[in-house]
Image 1 (cartoon, rainbow, N blue to C red):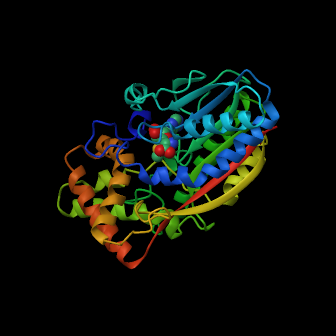
Image 2: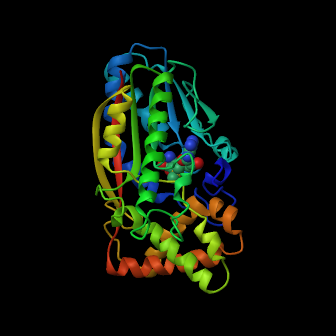
Image 3: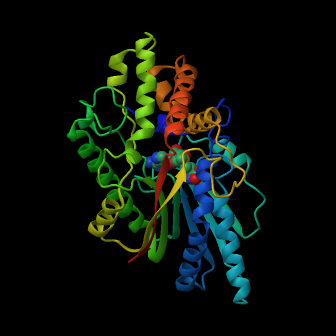
Length: 355
Ligand SMILES: C[S@@+](CC[C@H](N)C(=O)[O-])C[C@H]1O[C@@H](n2cnc3c(N)ncnc32)[C@H](O)[C@@H]1O
């Protein structure tokens, strides 16, 4: 399951579009902004003077976040060049996502950038080659690399769980971890072919704190989706066999797994690796001091966020008719969960230099 078209986010014409439900990912971008600036500064100190800096944003999606990294990178370059009294280089930005991403909306909203910034769309998987050899100075990707190229096939005995759960047989977490190792190693090898020596890469992905793959920060959000599907099985709206054969193609690694893969693959020096947390409910954030917890509202926010990123694959597997019902139940389960416990996503952030 999960061929590339169903792994895209909900398009702008959908009731719960990614464009209108990506505030959580925006918070991740805001939190990583200082490190992005520093990384660009360091990269420029190695590659200037240059006539054109080539930057790739992998997994750009479609919506208000799509141009955020481009603005930040462009502004940082302009500021640094002004301070150094030198002319800014031209900037070519490649916005990449899967071919079924809502690129029409992206292209229609290409803002009026400065004349020296050129935007290009690149449709394809970042688990394949995307750019000519030794052509890219800087690679950025936020909230994408926990998406796998496919569901590992060894998870067929995962019963009704849609992801790793405390009830999954041990081979399930091993298979997910192995699929992530293969995918991330391949990603690094491909980017090393495309990037210039001394180029930088900054990646943010969802991960987990504990080395235990059945820990809450890895499993809980998806266990609640399993619970919602099982509710629909009990109502006779979904077949149990359909739940048994459905798994999500993503994996939340721990820091140690990520570090070891980078070291073993060997093309990059790992300059920085860190973790930070964001609350499941995007409204409950450091920038919103007036936040007051309302369980139903929080549950709905989390449900919309998960719906915007999973609806195409759920429709592909279960059909369209269950979706509203499923996410009504999911919002209720999340509300009840948040009443007992404030749960957070763990994000892993890393900066690397191409050897
Ligand atoms: C949660 S969105 C993040 C989007 C954006 N970077 C942001 O911060 O809002 C993840 C994006 O990764 C894309 N994606 C997933 N797997 C991909 C792959 N193999 N190649 C390219 N893009 C991929 C999805 O289509 C989706 O647009």
